[in-house]
Amino acid sequence: MAELFHQLESNDTRIAEEVKEKFHEQFKLVQDSWLLYGLYEYYMVSNSVRSMEIMVNIREPHYNYLFNKLSDTIKGSKLEPKVQALTLLGHILRKEPFWLYKITEHHLLKDLLKLLKTETDILLLLSSLLALVVLLPIVPSRMGQYLPEVFEIFSRLAAWNCSNPEKLVEEQMIHMQVALYALFQRLYGMYPCNFLAYLRNQYRSKEQMPIFVHTVKPMLDTVKMHPLLVTASKDKETTTERWKKMGAHDV
Image 1 (cartoon, rainbow, N blue to C red):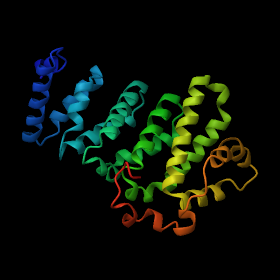
Image 2: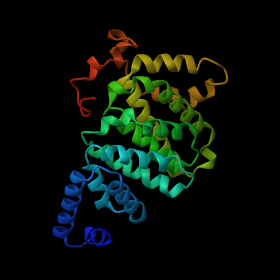
Image 3: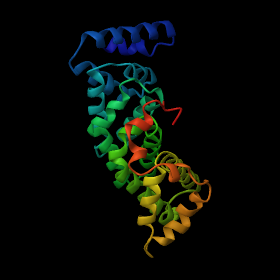
Image 4: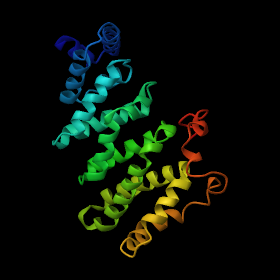
């Protein structure tokens, strides 16, 4: 394995591609987890882009092993491995392998949402928030059950955005605002009935009003009235029927 990993990083792209193909052939033959776990650990040590490219093209049952490793790392206590795991997850999301929808059936998604509900490190927050923003249009019909948690994340980060600017450098603050606005656009564009119902309930108290005025209202001011607010309902906009003919780019 050590020799294969060495050849994988060869400056000769032909050799690197041959090694990738060897790994793909092994993944077809091996059903146990050791091969994926070994490749994952190599990625964690080396940050190898080529190892990420191999893992994106794995098949059943190996993607489940990959979800397990990502989940275990995200739940860990060390910052750098978490960042690496979220970087790999982001790479997977951008490539959209055919098995990606299975993430909604794995506790990895719950662990990602939990991180967004509890984490305070700006780098982890941004990495996980952008992963969520990318994931939403990929599995729109499967996110209905998670919407309450996603809305909670939005309100938590809106409050965090309002109360923590002095603790962030200007560049970090801009990145957080852009990422939060991207989440707002996703939620308003995809689930307007559910999202506005949540916002009305969440920001009706005097305690929450400063957050609404500072962060949420400026976002609402940038969008027009969504037609689904007239033609749809909270239940209808989360049905499988609505999304089944749409790809992520359509959403």
